[in-house]
Image (cartoon, rainbow, N blue to C red):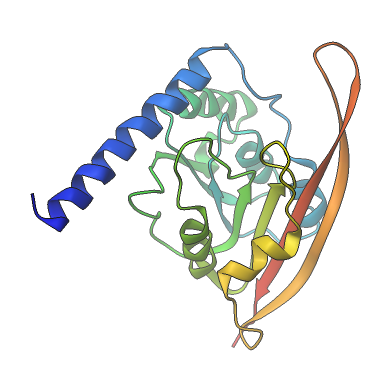
Length: 213
């Protein structure tokens, strides 16, 4: 088998594995996420003038629906058809279905076309193989001049590991002549564990704006 066919085989297998994994993830529960938008998104984007937005790994649509309610026109993508069905139903209930284009999309294979005033990647982690740095580089390329790339990560993504916000930004290799860093910080948040105990998490926040020419 040629190198090209090997690559196609690996990509095809990866797509099947990713789709199966995330479909199983959403099928395990009737509702996985709270439906509320991520707090950092609300904080960073709440004061911006609405435009076009790309929501990467939109899940059940909490962020996309919030953005649409603020007046944004949103392209929301996820690999899971089940998650997208739930998101679309939520958008219809919220009365913003006409402002959101939900698309099933495997970011391993191709990045959504177009340019956007906001590209949001909220917790775009995966327990299965995922070319995250490449996808985030493509996300940066999709930001319009004057637009914003917002990335929020779990600071700890595996037992014993700890990442700083600079470790998310550096591999993107963004030129300071073209980009301005608006936020580069670690932020704590509290969640309630199923047993009722409060748990503190640390998130890395990266917000960079493409300079207008």
